[in-house]
Every structure is written in C-alpha cells, then in structure tokens.
Length: 206
Image 1 (cartoon, rainbow, N blue to C red):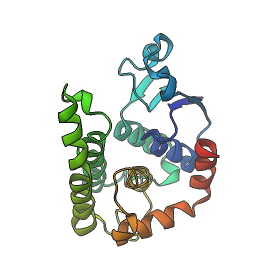
Image 2 (cartoon, helix red, strand yellow; image 1 turned 60 degrees about the vertical axis):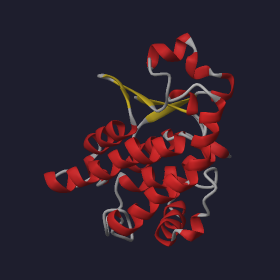
Image 3 (cartoon, rainbow, N blue to C red; image 1 turned 180 degrees about the vertical axis):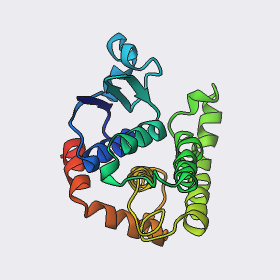
Image 4 (tube, rainbow, N blue to C red; image 1 turned 90 degrees about the vertical axis):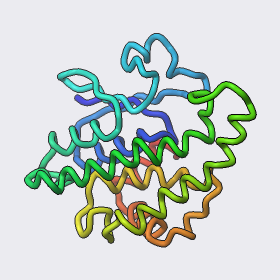
C-alpha cells in the first residue's frame, strides 16, 4: 500500500488529490508543521529534506511533487491522468508542473520562508513585499500562454490541474484576489466540484 506524508495547506494536496483520482489503495500520515514535526528524527528518516509530500512505495520513498504525480499516472494508467502514449504531450505536462514547482512555488515561498535566502529582517520584509507582484506575474503568464482550457492541457483533466489548484489556493495569502484572474478562478471552481477533490479537502480541512 502507498503511504502519503502530508501537511494541510501544503503542496502535498496535489499528490493527495491524484491518489484519490487514480483510485489508489493508500493511507496518509499528517505532519504537523506547527510543532515542527517535519524536523523530527522520525520524519527525517522518511524524507531527509524535511518537507512534504513524501510517498512511501514498495520500491522506496519518493519526494518532489512532479515526480510523485508522474509516478502515480504511470502506476495507474487507467485513470488517464497523463498522455503517457505521447512523449511530447507528456513533456509539455512536465514543463507546466516543473514551472509550478521551480518558479511559482518559490515565488510564493519568499513571503514566509525568507530565511532560505537571507539572514536579515529587512531582507525578509523586502521579499515579502515583492510576493504579490511576482506571483501575479506567474499566474498572468499561465493564463496568457500556458492554460488551454477548460483544463490546463485542454479538454482532458490531468496531473496539471490538481497541482495548479493547490497553488491557486495560496493566492489569498499572497494578497491576490483570484477573481481578478478569470481563467484561474473558473478552473478553481471547476476542480472543486470534483468528488475526489471534495473528499480530500474534507480530509485536510474538515
């Protein structure tokens, strides 16, 4: 059985949704960031990075959202969550998810994780002030150049959609009104109507 380590409100939400969408047999373990459980010896034995998600499989432990998502799509091909028979389309999917991971997530993290890049409070304050501008620029690029509609890749729901949704949920924290991003807002409403998403949200926030 697969086991997902997650924390509510984190990027692990995407992996949790995909596990549910894929019909996987899985269990979860909640990591309490408030008590810094991610720094405990027990969790560091699972993921030395001290971050979620981490997915325990029968072949070892995976971390990093794009890797976990593609593993799940390949492990449960019947779910149709990635265009696995089309190398170029799969690469496009990976390009989108890599952008979310390496650019959008990092832009957001400058608001609350400034200690990763600097030491002075003035630097933290400056980074935090910049977040609404940089994150909005990321989402405007997504809307203008990357979003096909009605789902990220077009007519077919894919791994990109729960991942985009997960990061969209952070916009309020970044002082951005999602209603000012029409494609993103419509996508958020569309994905929240899915039963699998509703079930996972209840597990995280219910």
